[in-house]
Image (cartoon, rainbow, N blue to C red; front, side):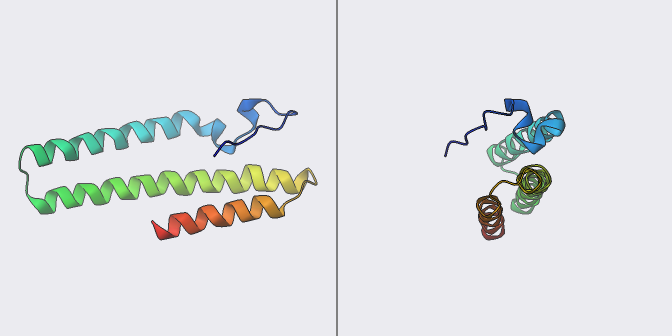
Length: 105
């Protein structure tokens, strides 16, 4: 799915997470390291419970990233649409759909 950036905004101003981009990238880098660790644990025949514990930690870390992005979306994109007098129904439906996907995962 391609997201179009409004012509009156620069790409950096288009997304709510931009101010925390470095923090998100650092968190994702740590998660990437954790997943490599899980791969190594399986390769080294580590105990199942230890592997499952690490998988749980990765899932929680990804969920925290997702919740942060959702919060940024609500504060920036949805609130911005309301403040700019734009059609908010589409933004609210988009946010609801994202929440539904997160809840199902």
